[in-house]
Every structure is written in C-alpha cells, then in structure tokens.
Length: 214
Image (cartoon, rainbow, N blue to C red; front, side, top):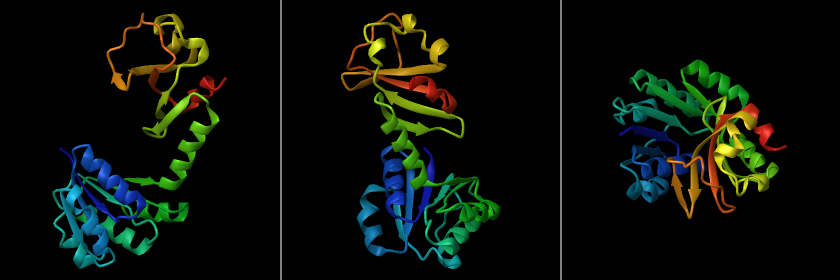
C-alpha cells in the first residue's frame, strides 16, 4: 500500500486525496483550514491542520515515512516551496508539485520537485480531446508520450473483430480491455465482433491520436 501526503485541500488537492483513498492508498491530508480538514477526515487515513507556510508546523507532521508527497497549494508560492523542500529533506522519494504557471514550475523544479503538474491546463487538454472526437469518452495522460483513451467503436468497426480490424497496424494503438455491460475485461477474444455499446480501453502514443480522428 502506497502512502501519500497531500498538502493543500483546494479543489484539486481534495479530489486527489479522496481518489487516492478510494483506490486503497494510505493518505494524509493537510491544510490550514480546520473546516476542510474536518470534512475530509472520515474519508482519509489521517487529516491534520497545519500552516503550510510555517516550517516548524510542516516538519512536525511526521511525514518522513511517506512514499509520495503532493504539494497542491498552487496559489501560494512560498508555501509550495516550503512543502517541497521539507518533503525532500525528510526523505520522501517522490514529490509532485502543482504549479499555476511556468514561472512557478521552474522555481518548484529547482527547489527539488520531481514532477510538476498543471491540473487546470491538463483538464483543459483532456476535455478538448473528448470534444474534438465523437468517439472519445475519456482521455488520460500516462506521461509525456503515452495516453489512455476510453472510446466507443467507430461505426466502421462495429460487427468486426479486433483480429479483422488489425488496429495496431492501421492506427498504431493497443486495445488493453473491452467494456461491455458496464464490465471492463482485459481478457479479450480477438475473434469476437465489436458491438455498438462496447467501450474500448486503448493505450497509445499521443502522436497517434490523429489517426483515430480521420
């Protein structure tokens, strides 16, 4: 079980903490707002009130055994820097920091963050991908190169099997699972025809998405 400390319970931080907890992670949620902490406490492993701009308060949290730290105080550069620095000093191996702009990203990277995220920008891109394709239902980036798509079969795919369609060769995509009747299965029969209500979970490189929009 992974242990994650989430600093800052804004919209992104709160959503992340709850999602991680539901996925089975050991989650510590930290924020200066007592009401936010009280509201999330029943749903995470541990919730703590702390001034994230106060070095002594952050150091006293006992986060040295955490696997991952997520610094989600994107609107407060001083607090973000402090949380990143202390997380690294306390030996947390992987620190993710939210940035509101490129300047902040550069500073947090130099401070020691292992990865910088731009939640609002990434959500915008993800939504744009879904809007621009009639077939895309969900879109997620795995890293700078790979992504996962949940999509409906194209009209010309319906009634044909994955073996017949040869999607890897034609579109350079890999079907990882097929969802039917609200159940996702990774054991795929390549000879079974696709139905109109099927959903495909696809792993591909981002540059290959243009092939699916043709």
